[in-house]
Length: 389
Image (cartoon, rainbow, N blue to C red; front, side):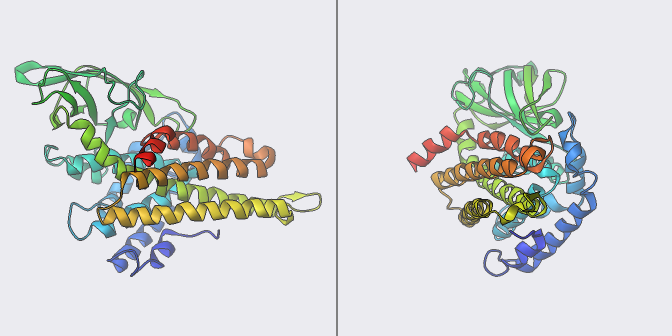
């Protein structure tokens, strides 16, 4: 449970996980330099507890540092190395600012940008701008009454001016929506205006017919929003009717793997803090960590964290090979979410009254664990996917 850096983690994997090990160590060194430079400013925990966290500033800084581009692979032989760089990025950001900045980063890179990168009708330059941190997008799929049931869409496709398309409806708890220049909107094409009937995925630019209201959740302060689309013009059809959900189902495997990577590292970061804190706290004249029950509790949690980290690593290997089953990705995310919640709860208890202070690492992780369990599919959906295999 000793503190680690991105560089030390990747250095230990050269030749076994990353086919381009030297390049990845160089990337990890740049990543460590970035987090060190911004730790007390852009990545400070306090600024991510505010109603308006610096999402755009963060993405711009990460993009300008070349970290997003380095963690991206269009296609071909560099895919495996790029995936491990992306994992290193998410692990590093799980260890700064109580892990909060990593939520905006993962949503930006692993959700909207990944989707745009694989869809042939994505406008030229949009992915390049996203990797530079100069443009942001958000996936707008869930709705107020439907929740995780994306087959119950009320958002619909309509006819616009000059033969164009519009979209009308409401989306709910959309990550990064308050900062998005474009929305990837899942909408029901009831009349086949995109070419076929059924759920379609549409690219909608921010504008006067797109209203976004920030929603304050239990964690991830200021990152999610409610979106009202009032005959908003469509810039591109990313997936025609009947194909929108299929695109998302394929994408979710990748997203769930990266969420598991992030949650496993966040759990270890909270556990590291709990171990250090138990060594500092004096109870009944001796350090708290000398209590056998406390030591056994920490050891049990350490075993659980190592378990989900190992599973996340295997998920990345399968993903790099293009052979990660949906049930495996769901199991990894489900287990990582449970371990994070358990670690955060136990760490909070071991911290005593200080653990209930807003902004304490365990308190923040306990809040975010609830949201991370929902991201990319609820616990019940993960169990359903695991059952199907």
